[in-house]
Amino acid sequence: MSTIHIVGAGPGRADLLTVRAARILARADAVLYDRLVTREVLELIHPGAELHDVGKEEGRQEEIQRHILDLLEDCGRRHQTVVRLKGGDPMVFGRGGEEWRWLVSRGWDVEVTPGLSSAICVPELAGIPVTYRGIAGGFAVVTGHRYPAACQEWSAYAHVDTLVILMGVGRRAEIADCLIAAGRDASTPVAFVENGSTPRERVIVTTLREAGLCDVGSPAVMVVGAVVNLRGQLIQAPDFDTAVDLTSLLQVGEAHTRQAC
Ligand code: SAH
Image (cartoon, rainbow, N blue to C red):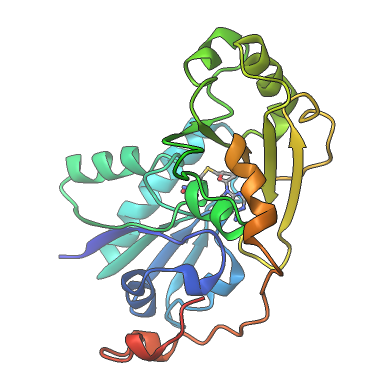
């Protein structure tokens, strides 16, 4: 009986994968991966594995999703270890929970491997901790896509200490306006972290008032709150030159000899 693994790929850098994810990729027979999964992570997949880039699919969202589920089943019938690889953590947006539920309802043996979610680790790597004693006692993670025109929906989040918005780049002006309309101070610091954890990372710091004006591309995490100001004290120089060699991480007992990133 084959197992279908739903695996988190983390934010981009291969050394931010969990050891468990790297081990599963190294023995995968088939992998279906999303748009946000980086080449660096794909290189860790077993060389003989069948690869399916399902992030490039075009068409209606429901049709694409249907195709992915069919393909997962097809791979499950032909292979022992099938991997559904998703950016960040598989249960933070991206329909991971729905795929899990559907596979279980169809009788498949499913195993889930969490990943580092961009919601927390992308700000963190850019020098922005989502909580900080005395500054932020809590945070919320919200999708920027969920509330097309309903500004009042944002009022539930306007006063959360740190608000982390994923998939919000295209609507940043509207989101900022809604938060201000809901009572958040227009001078609240805002950061956009684009391509977090990769050599193409770019951090833009602004305020809620100006958030709609700056030039930001996708994917980016938008962070709203006073913790953004900590960046200046926490980051000296970004370090992206560490060559990633995970070979020994995959060997039992050697993980502790590796240096953390
Ligand atoms: N499951 C993913 C989120 C999927 S939604 C996770 O846990 O990270 C996709 C959104 O995540 C993007 O639109 C962007 O807002 C954010 N994102 C994912 N990876 C990112 C990265 N490396 N840098 C910046 N934002 C990223």
